Image (cartoon, rainbow over all chains, first blue to last red):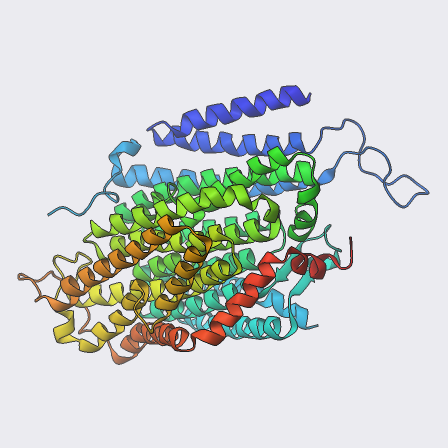
Length: 119
Length: 503
């Protein structure tokens, strides 16, 4: 299972990086979203995958013993998903507004802020 | 109970921002709340600084969960100083905004956003938890995104695309690094990490993680070669927004670098320091050379942000007590002077109608006082005694010679000279030479009322005064920086107050 998730994470990273290097704005958004997912899955995987051992304290005991699924990575991912969702929603609106204002979705055309002002 | 002061710098902006949302239609009430909240924040930050100086490090375990299980807020001297500096900039920016921000932006939640930005910045300075730092970074970023595009002019949108994309990328790197770190250490509490990381079996992977952190904070701090977003976006929003971004946002990145590579990865620092040393030399050089080619007031200053960041990173990379103290002093000096220069760029634009230095001119002839006000931060930035920048550069360069890094120290000296060249270019073009005819349309300075002018100039005067005072009373301030540096280099001093007596 770990191997499978490792491969999935790696593929997501590869796809995300490929997409953010494209000139088309929409592809760049998808690239950023994929990179976010890849980071979330990475946290999930390196937080140890344990199947069917929830982190419940057994009756009559006051602490966890033995192996158990660590809930913290899942809490981290949940937070990251919520933040990512908000930021991505903003980015999509920003990109749409940019397209409406500048009339282009080619990132190579957007270089006026990098050029020195014209004579 | 004194520990609870720690929460105020986060709480005040949050509460005032939320309150403002209830007064959506009344800009006047929003303005009053902004001013009140900013003064309160400055008072709280001053109190926090005084408490940390007299009583040592303060910690709060949020929700009463014992560290390392809950989220820790911790203020050592570095955090307290950074919060105090950011509160000062927050206050002056609110005053400056009252004079300059147009009605339309004010109506679309400009003031609440500014407070949310302050909350994110203060949170990042005060947190003692790596994942919590990520959350504060995001709070800060999303507020800065909206402030950057507010108004929606084509250049703003274009600058924002670059700024947003690179920052989202760096956030995902941050997230991945935090995840891997948790997988190895089983904790994200900074103090606990400082305790555990030297004993972890996977030291190679730890190096990888520290490099990931270096990249993500390098993007935020605009370190070579990760700085291209900065001069592409910082000159696009209104001046007040540019100024607060220039003063604070990159410094949050520098703060995070210092925190991670002194407190948390102290044993990892040897390798990172070599990389940072090379990066700092290139950052200083590329920033100042980029600035030499610019004729737009704010773009020129943006490039100077980068070259100044190089000095701070240089101090961190040298890693001696003197160098780190120098870097801390440099950060404070730079926050004040750089923000001030951006404020002045706004004043010059009001008078001449343009940011283009070639079309501007004649400010000194018409308004000699503004010329003097410009010279204070400009000469401070270039390192002319007795202003703060002279001492900041002096200490860093002395530390560089002590460490035997002659090449990079030589570059630092050269960059100081080139900074002076840039500042003199602004002086000659915008202030000294006659206003070129025909004049650019839209001189809106003469139409400003007295109250507005007061708000317009008070931030510049206050920050100019601070720059002078930092230079004149260098010794007590620097003693403070030395104490802060000693705290940073002594990891145990950070671990014990947070975790209590664990071994």
